[in-house]
Length: 262
Picture: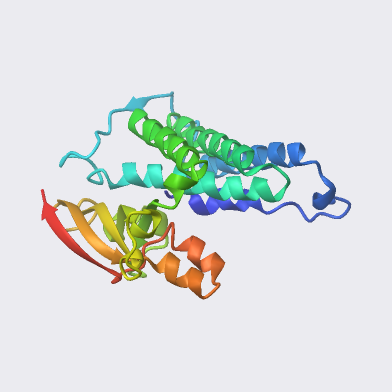
């Protein structure tokens, strides 16, 4: 996830004199956004990640085993980044005139292209190509399309990240020591749940790793929990943007977790 901030740069159209972005056909906008994203990643990779400094190579990074670099948290980072970017781009494309389904399909395809262009660039550096990252990118994009185009699933399931900053690192996107990844099952999405208070609750299943990239004993933690549906509460107050954000970001201290370590 070290690259999310860079990817977002491509979403802001050019304001150069003589260029009218609002009058540009949506098909060209789509092309420009993808081309800009690939160009930014390539340039940044050459300058900062030593792209094209080595012959292409691939590495077996493992999945969630105890000997891996991040205990598997980085794999969930790839899944979440691809999932969130698919939704973000899909919504952007929808505002340009595409239907919701078309926008999300193009968003998922664009996210897949962008994320795996970076993975391809990694193959020409010391990072090396990771098929695990490639698979998780693909799963994230496919899941975004599957859920986003099925309202009956979208109202029940959220994939979220929780982050508690420590303000001693500039790269928050790869600060896996402070991140948690989870899927939330929202009770208000089920017709069988009729009690008004129960509709404000949700069930969580999550995972995080600690001690892999910092001093300490490596620990992988799987947890289940029960939380408060903040998205529903915010929506009641017509805070629609915050309500949508709460579908992707888990606010700390709004749930009770029951954990098991490995």
